[in-house]
Length: 459
Ligand code: BGP
Image (cartoon, rainbow, N blue to C red):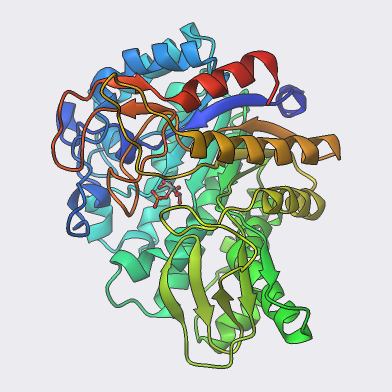
């Protein structure tokens, strides 16, 4: 079977981006507005209108990816380029753009890994209630049907939803206004159903590829050996990680999370048909984004969250509260660095789900400096990647099946929360937060390092 063959293959060394963070051209060639185009960004950070201008420079970028030696490239399709209002008439220029991108990747010998939805819901759907409205499930199905029809022969690896867990856990806090937990978990449920229906549709279409989810997965440690902390870590892991994978892999609701949702009065309405859809739309593989582990302790106070983002500061009264791990250093943006936790996480996911794993994000955000002779010395990023790849290789040697490793990010792009100054790329983009300069591309030291690693297999 084609599927087994695809999933049996050796690891592909790649890199990642997402549409709204890299493409720019936010209103070019008939593109509609997404929630990212209209949201207010924190003061002092850029918006996403130009980003890295990849939409207009993708040929040059793919030539660089080829020179880098990438075997796969994980990117997302902007829903609003394909369907400006989320539903209705397709935008032919948008459809043609991704054909050109895919053809260019094929010519460069780079396998595309395509996320269909990465944080950029069409604004028109959002105005009609977004994921709280069951019509969005239908819109998502129609959008995906169109993508499979158009690109089904060119794409072998599909990803449904990027970091649904972060949209649910952190999204509403950052941009959502005043949603109740019940509303948040109803939306989350609709995303489960949408993902399952699209997965089933893909399977029924007999396309020559595989499909899976892409949550942000990170092992949580108990802060101490106190039994209370152990239980807190178990609830936290269920709430942040396994809830999303149990749904994608088995089509089931995690029982510990149900307990939490009952306490929060946030149990969503689930129809009989939803349950059937979820059971019938199970994924072929697991893609995951890993940045760092978390540590939690039992939580008897009122704290529901600190200044949390996707990698820190989550808390839930009576269940858990995240704390700093004194054994770990942090990046200059305050995220802990834990390569060994990567190995732990990979083992845990492999043992729980027995499916091939694809790493779709892993990387270090930093304030890179461009020297006068246009170089970027980023030993901190090389060190991060080296230590994480080392752990990935150890996990593979010990039996974890990993089909691709795609660090974040292939090229500099606008960070979800911290604008342009938090750079992740292997390729530097010459612009500042607000000064767009010439947007020229420069190879960072990490580019040459990763290039050598891909060519020789040596760390
Ligand atoms: C993940 C997202 C990416 C990216 C990354 C880094 O959660 O999938 O889109 O943004 O995190 O996060 P940030 O840009 O906030 O540093």
